[in-house]
Amino acid sequence: MATVEELLRGAIERLRAAGSESPRLDAVLLLGHAIGADRTVIAAYPEALVGDGSAERFEADLARRELGEPVAYIRGFKEFYGQAFATDPRALIPRPETERLVELAEAETIRRLAAAPRPVGTPPLRIVDVGTGAGTIAVALAVALRRRGAGAEVEILATDVSADALALAIENSVGHSVADRIEFAEADLLPEGVRPFDLVLANLPYVPSADVPRLAVAASFEPAVALDGGADGLSVVGRLVEGLPDALAPGGLALLEIGSDQEDAVLALVARILPGWSATVERDLAGAPRVARVARP
Image (cartoon, rainbow, N blue to C red):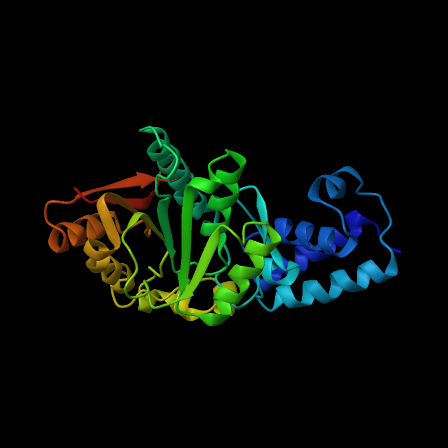
């Protein structure tokens, strides 16, 4: 039997040769998945022997990763906002950058709930997650608000144009015990006839069409509809911005994830479509433009 260190050494070399951008991390995550241990155990016991069955599982997963399949799809889950989400090719893999959007949404929700007394009978704060994908934004927010004792004061709707993605989102809501806090609807952006929302959240496709084929090979395993934002990357975002006068209540706020090079374009887009509205851009932890804040007067 081989040791943890021996298996990792060979795997890192193979993944580096295959073009992985993070061969060591990929190897550690896949080995941990095969033997049922986390990264700290892998690091602490490099001399531990790995059983034949686990080694075979690791080899099979390694072969899939060499072909470019994302680690999150191989493992079947991805960590996001301190939680583990079921992940498969029905939806985009959650990105760490999107945690900034959830962080802002959580803070804004708590601020609005605490801004004025809320006597019995006050309508819940209405929030919609447009293009929910695997449900990561809606579910992560619902869990965070429940933890802060504010879950019952909020209504969350999650929409997606893909029925398959919605099915995965529902699975994640059940897995995190917030299925009773989120309503799901299949729709191209927003369903018709819904009442306006206090908060509109969206991580819509924003990669320019010409750039999609140039993404890392792992992205080719993800649904193209979740990545391709049209010629300038903002066609879908632009359609949502056009619909904000109907979607947002007076004083409402939209938080829209954008590409790191789209700040000026998004601000110009909002100024053209929604004159008189406020638009600013929040940075992520790396200092890159990440979330557009669009506020209705």
